[in-house]
Every structure is written in C-alpha cells, then in structure tokens.
Image 1: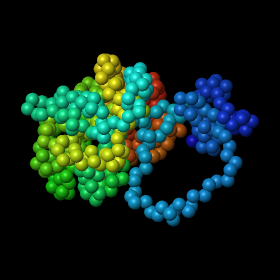
Image 2: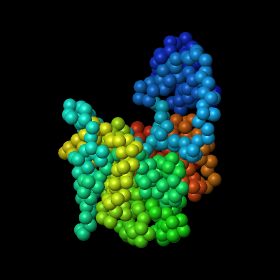
Image 3: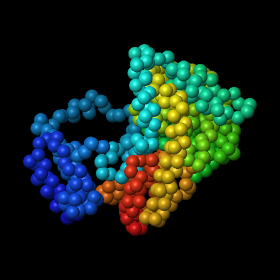
Image 4: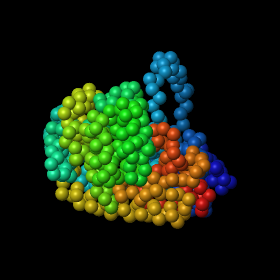
Length: 468
C-alpha cells in the first residue's frame, strides 16, 4: 500500500520524469532517501508505483531510468487466438523463483547463488582459453566431449562402495542444462499419460517438465528425512508407475538428505518393482555440514538414472549438465537428446571441463562451504529474532534454501504481496507442491545477494505475519 509519504515522493518524481529525456538515469535509492528525508522502504514504494505506471525502466545492477514513451498504436494479436487454438496442455506458469529483482529489493526468492559465491576468475579464464581452442569452431560428439564425460563418470565413481561397478565415460550424456534433461527423461522413461511418482513438495522445474510431457504426477509425501519407502512401494503397486523422481541430497525445497538406511530401502523398492529412480543431484557442490551421497553410486544395475548440473555452481552462462544411465535406457535417452538439441555447445563444454579440472576448483568449493554456512546461520538467527512464528522443521545440512512453515491460516499471496511492497521478494511454498499444499510455507534462499540485509528481511516477514 502506498502511504502519504511515498505518494508525495512519487508525485515529485513524476514531475521530474515529465521533464526528463527518455533514458535519463534517476538518482539511486540512497540519494533519494537523503533528498526526501524518507526511509528506503518509502522510497521503494514510490518507485514501484511509478514502475507500475510504465514510467520507469529498472535495470538490475545498473540503475533506474526514464522509460522511452511509445507512441505507436498498440499491436493487435487477436487473430492468433483462432490460429493457435486451445493449448495442448496446461503448463504451470513459471514460478516466483525466476522473477527478476529490482536494484533495491532484498531477494530471497531466486534459486541461484549470488555472483560472490561463484568461481568467477576460473570461469573467465576458461572462456578465454576455450575461445582460442578448437571447441569454438567444431561440433562436439553427440554424447559430449570425452574429457567432460570422463570427469562426470569419475566424480560419481569416487563414492561407489566396494563391489559396485563405477560408471564409465560411455554411460555419460552431456545435456544443455538439467531442465532439458528432466523433460527428456520424462519422455523416455515415463511417457505421456503415464504416472510418475514424485516427492511432495518437489522441484517446481520437475512439475513444469511433467506438465509439458503430459506425464501424470503421483505425489509421495516427504519430510525433513525424505519419503516413506512403504508409501512409495504402495504407490508403485497402486499406480503401475515405472519411475520415481527424487532429490536425495539437500532436496529443493525441503533441504532433506536421505540416510544410508533410507537409500537402501528406496533402492530395494525400485529394484523390486522393476522401476527407475530418476535422481536429481542438483546441489552436489552445496554441502555445508554433510557431503552428498549420490544414490547412483550404489547402483550398477541400471535402476538409477542420474542427473547432475554444473550451472548453479559455475555460472548461469554455463548451461551444462549430464545424465548418467546404463543399458538400453542410455541409448534411448541419447537418441532423444539428439532429436531435441543435436549436441551441446562445444565451447560451453570446454569451459565447464576447464573449470572443474583446475586446482582452484576444489579450493573454491572449500571456501563456498564456509560461506554458505555463515549465510544459512545468519538467516536462521534472523528469523528466530524477528519472525518467531516461522517454524523450521530442520536446519538443512546443505543446499541453498530454508523451508519455512508459517502459521495455519496464513494468506500466502497476501503475505508475499506485503513483503514485496516492503522490499522483500519471497517464494510462496504452494508453487512446490504437485498437488494440494499440506500447509503454508515459504522457500527462503540464503545464497542470494546482500546477506547483511537478512535481519531486515526477517523483520519485514515478521511484521507481515504480525509477529514483530
């Protein structure tokens, strides 16, 4: 809600904008706070009001500018309604996690780590070297560059227990990001109109990929320790499903990490049903007080199909991931991947291989663990101090997020709007459930920019809940 002070500031800026040239830069929020002797929240409310009127152009990390006024007549695209017809499926809208944050917003919504947590020096040097090499001009093999296949296989093989054959480089298929991989796996291993068992809550990207492929999701309730294997077995029996999608390590959004005992029980269920476990190891580099234990490392029978991305841990510009599968399933997945994208940019593969094989990579990961721990602990403490009604079922041992339970009856959309109006972006937990939500939750990312603002963010959340 815009108060009198923010309305006064908006009116003054509106008059200033009217006399400014299109593209002119406005003063920073800090300068406007000093000019109008107002709080940052009040200034942000005024800017958001002007943004909603189409008067501003906010460029994250750059500044706020006067938007160029369009004088051309509005385009009429109504003819496309008849040409396109009804959509083939109701694909869920993209979640709040992909929303672009303004310059002065405290961003707790994104699923990506802050730039300060990325190995920027290694990435930039790798791009320079790759641009000078053959990868910049040649087409790579369909399954991926051999050196990158070898690295993915070796990394997973490092954790294979005695008696289990580690994967070979030939089991690896390099893909352009894990989201593309999930769509491919759901097409190949499940198929349209067929059931797929998933943890609930689960990664929103899996929900979107399933909707695109017309796959029917069957939710399996999960908690701080993971899913109940007995319920999983019953669901296989009831539905005839032949695949289960899960995140055994630092699950997004709950942060759950399977114990060795649970892993063995889930493997027993999957093997007994002649089914696949699609393991999404999205947070492999983000362990804090524990290391990931990939389930795929314990299986050499082809029941576990492993998805592993490097995008979040290297750079959002490096859209490189891998699927590790064995047997005929691997052949079908490769054929589908070729039909979908033919091959992954050799330049990006060369960059990814360069970064993860540099001595500085492991040094970076050691520092990252400490940085994530500090950010997580600061957010936990901030919520305890300023939003005591927020309940954390568990403190995650890794990953990038807290899964926060709110009081029953909380109006999540209203809460999210109130937080955004006060300068904090949060993700309503409803977006992570494949069926009806089982409670009111927020997913709060502690790896985003400006961790010093976490106490202010918690104070705003607490105020919106009426607890501060």
